[in-house]
Image (cartoon, rainbow, N blue to C red; front, side, top):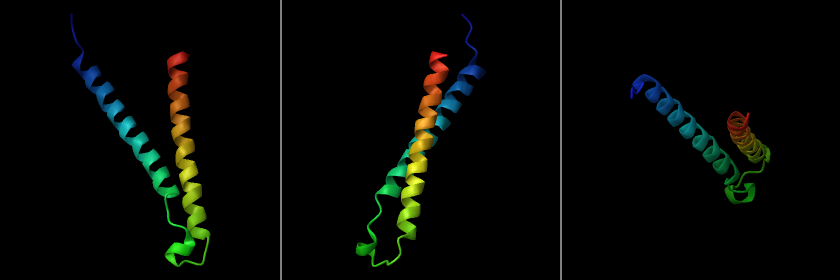
Length: 76
């Protein structure tokens, strides 16, 4: 039995980067939705809250797309 250590290391590295990236993206989405309302922060504009919510939804959409792509790779 011969183990290809370079290929094993490559798979480990790609898996680690993908996992950390996906968890980081999901965390950004949660942080974007967890912002305080404008009345609590004393802000009068809705722009930053709307931008944070939109960015959070974009992060969640990218996470869903990555999961769907992974399922596609496994099934196909």
